[in-house]
Picture 1: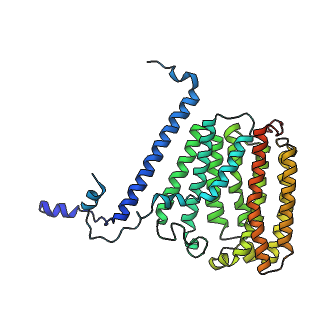
Picture 2: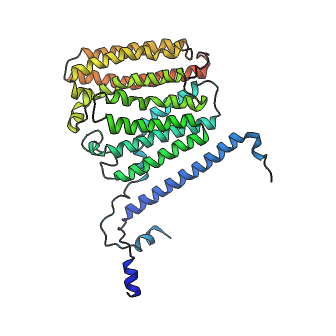
Picture 3: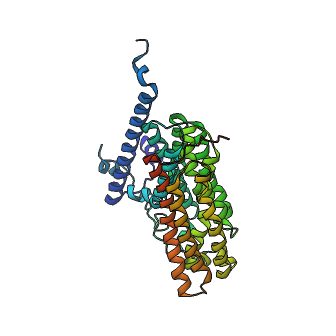
Length: 60
Length: 319
């Protein structure tokens, strides 16, 4: 089997994305990014709240 | 790499993709934001009136988890019910029947949010509240949506428990336990649900009949539904006074709730005494609208009393 045939065999038949779909995918990705950033911030703030004054009390 | 570059790398000969059409707004709609708003409010009251107090950040986290959990069960409900949603005027424009989001996308979205909401509640708030939240999602999806909704006319009586849990979860977020007081808050919403939904079902029974959902007016007739609305309303009003009897609501709550209850009974009586037709639909619509305001005001009173320091001071009866 030639190298070109091998490359054709592995080619994945992906669907075509329209401009509108790409725009919506970008929107969704941004929403996910903001949600994850918010979740990270939430865990950070709650950790600070729960540790209170002990937040800096750790071995360096 | 830009999106356009990615798309150019792909084989464009394949069929149009299934999925990927939903906007962020469509996914937000899957969370049933209007239902979520009442859930958030009742949960907030549960958090506020629970004894002991909670750090505002932890309280906000609990509320967020309850909201996301409720939204996730809404998305899972839309996934399972997409077939009947498509045939009812009220629900035909939801993201799945309208073709903007696939059923599979909704199922994955709802499942991921459910797991995140429950785990976040457990790790950041407490595991009693997390367990109650998990049970609520399970109850709404499996017990109500999958099991009861299409099988029995008592679907919303038992399924209503799912909507009644949020104040109990809020209470558990503060106290780490379930108590008689939080069960009283649960019972108020539990008893409120049947007359609220049956009032809607009376003037929407055609929709439910068309898709084979055995709502009470479809199965037992409109006269029996009107009678059941009256009976449940009679049971509801004394239940709304439980917070006063249990000592965590004061005179303002008791007086105003009794007056609001009298209004509820009057409208329920109006539905009961009408015959079929336009007059019944009008009375049912009036009761349905009032029932939303009624529940909102009852929980607002509990919140207002707590903020003004007028509520009862009885210690929580922890189970």
